[in-house]
Amino acid sequence: MFVTAVLVYIRSYRQRKKEYLNEIEMKNELHQRELLATQLEIQQATMQQIGRELHDNIGQKLTLVSLYVQQMLYENKVPEASERIDQVSQIINQSLQDLRSLSKTLTDDNINQKEIVTLIQEEVDNTNSFKKCHVSFEHNFKQLDLGFVHKNMLLRITQEFIQNSIKHSRCKNIFITLNTSEDILWELDIRDDGIGFDTSDIKSNEIGLTNMKNRAEIIGANFRMESQKNAGTQLNIILRKQS
Image 1 (tube, rainbow, N blue to C red):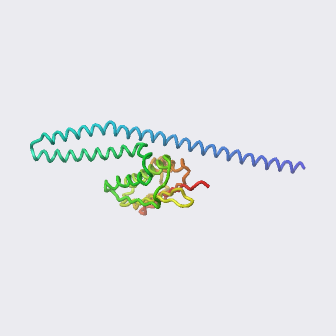
Image 2 (image 1 turned 90 degrees about the vertical axis):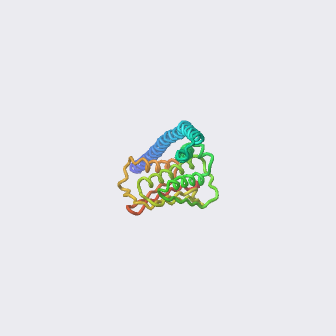
Image 3 (image 1 turned 180 degrees about the vertical axis):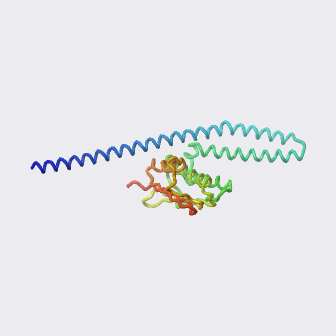
């Protein structure tokens, strides 16, 4: 009976220890998620502030310059100078348009008011306008009903991947797909045809890659990135429906 009691005690102790360690692990994971969420909230607040400054400060100054140039064009009587002034005016107006587009992208209002497909397509169109590489976007649904957090995460991850590919991969094409199915709320797949990289060489302080992974973790999505030298890079993020 004594041996049996000892065995029961040891088994009970091990079970309690296992439950305690699981509880600690869950608390650590929750704490880590809260830290990630706080970091991204700070980044988001900074981006909003930058967006507002671009719109309210620099945007207004560019508008004023545009008005001055239009006045110069109206008052000028020299044909050769008029042509140059008109060229300057076109550059300023295009810069103003690009600035407004960037400002909208950085603020929450743009995300709240539009569908995720529209937001990603706008990012694709903006990238293609620079003609550094060609970005294509496909999806398999008419409408995907997502809240602000999911739209924000999807958009920011897409922007991060595109920027990293253009900056580092020397790619000619970027392919984006966003699909949904019976058991998957959404699946985001992005790949490029660039030079790729050795995933074992990724540094822990690689901000762009870390941000993408952190954003996926915050909403409970599965994150996978694969890359090989001279074979491009592929990102796959899946959020399954809750059972």
